[in-house]
Amino acid sequence: MNAEQKRAWLAVVSGIICLIGYLISIPFVGPQVAVAIFGLYGINGISGLIGRKERPDERDKIIARQATLGGFAASYGALWVGCMGGWLGAFAWKGQEQISVHVLGAIASLGFMVMWFVRGAAILVLYRRRLEAGHV
Amino acid sequence: MSEITNCIRRLRFDHHEMTQEELARKVGCTRQTIIALEAGKYTPSLALAFHLARAFGRTVEEVFTFHDA
Image (tube, rainbow over the protein chains, first blue to last red):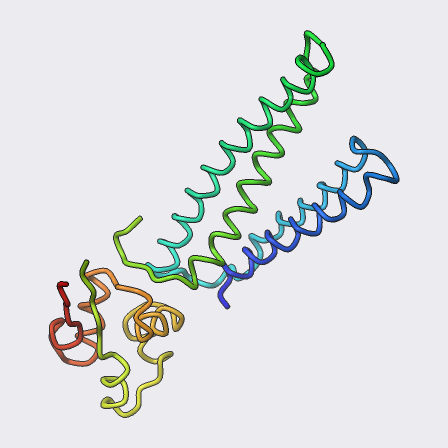
């Protein structure tokens, strides 16, 4: 297992732990406070320290690039869902004409987390799949 | 659909049972990539194909075979 795979495992496992922790916390503290558990996802900030001396070769670079593209595509989807969800929740459901500015930060965080999680999952999948150089 | 196969594993054994690690170091890639190449899970770039062929003192066509289906 190389450094990129270790980083990917950290992203996926910490993401799953945060999601489970969030779902478990909801009955005790409510959905708005339970969101704080996603702060644990910040542990991925140390992933840059994993395998700093390892030099990726052409296959590693292709996989990282494909996974990053997939991650960004997923984050755009998450941002769209977050924006529409925010609008539906505040305007259509609660009848509010204004949306709290704090929602923007939550949506941006959601986009980042989805990007990092999907990128990690894609890396783990791509290392098992057949690849051709030049197919990016 | 086309497929490219290789005989890297056989050539390694023909060259004093060269290890995957030694070959990887020689051609400038990781051992994981050599494993993927031997398993047919990765088709390398032209540059890496030339490096591999030169590591065995062969031509690219001797190491890689192109199957056009």
